[in-house]
Image (cartoon, rainbow, N blue to C red):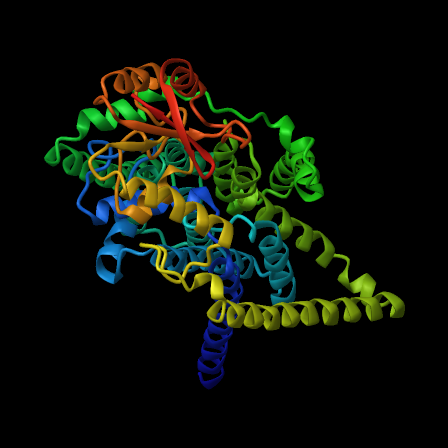
Length: 504
């Protein structure tokens, strides 16, 4: 009895230590980062609008379902409407992703050294991209689902409450991003049919599936009630369903294969190989406990389409990397006895363990250094609204000051910035302009670019529009038809910072 209690507390202290280590490493990356990530800016702007009392779709344009900004908006309301609050949420979210990865490997009986080594590799792959984002939120919930399904299989104690909670998590995925969430929900309902355990016949399968579907529908029903009570149903349909036909943003998978990033190139080439090897292993070894893991992995890959850039690819492939890491551990473990009989290999194995431990220790020390640099970083000592304690480069600060001083000096004139970076400036001014501040293809509702041009035609005379000067590169998602219309039909009257000024 005493030994069990001791083992329990030892395990919990180990989990706490590992989580704190993850938290420290993630914090050093997110807090130290200068203001530059547009995904971070856009997601903060959604949450800021909700904290200010605006209703998604009706008052501001977005194409994904609104659970993340609703949750983040509540935190902004409680703790202050500042981007730093979103960064703290991002630290908790991404730390949760890495910790759930560790928990999945541990429940599959992967040793701690191997698990931490894989976490470190995954951290190196993702650290450039981690931020507050609905795709990361779905990844976190997907890992919870994977962990729960594995644990449930081993515990072999099914309950209707368990299946209902699984349904709620799947429904929450749909409320984070409708496309990925639907695939995750479908995977949750379908994969149990791949096996009928001794405790699950066909009747039990349909019963538990019904309970899951009930759990899925509750978050969706709550969203419908929220939208209906705020008269935003038709706007929701317009932006998230009808507006999809104007979504021409596309990055082909081949761009990953031809990437200059060697890791991305190798992983994109290896993806179909990983999938095939994993499927063959699970079927040949009859690993029914991992069937759900594999199906969730397939569902997660949908995030890679249609924008196959680095961040979408790495998020989508993360569950597969965890599964493949486990299979690699399982394979190498079978050779351990042979290896330990070889003095040289045993010595190299011990050296490798020491190097990994030393690398982790060095990075934790580096994290302390980066955090201390953050707290004394002069670039975060500014007075720009909503960006308190966020490092901002001198160049960007000058741009924000120049553009916003120009807007403030023309108080009686409507001024819009038609650029992907518009939110950076408008956040600092505490303003929001629907369809202008989120100026991206596919984010303008069903009328698309033609509808935006019609809006511009009916703007008040004297209104000024800022578009990026020709010498600066436009975001690849910029609605170029609208930019072309402005250049060909409006009068350029001046320039400010990186923008040309046109007047209606």
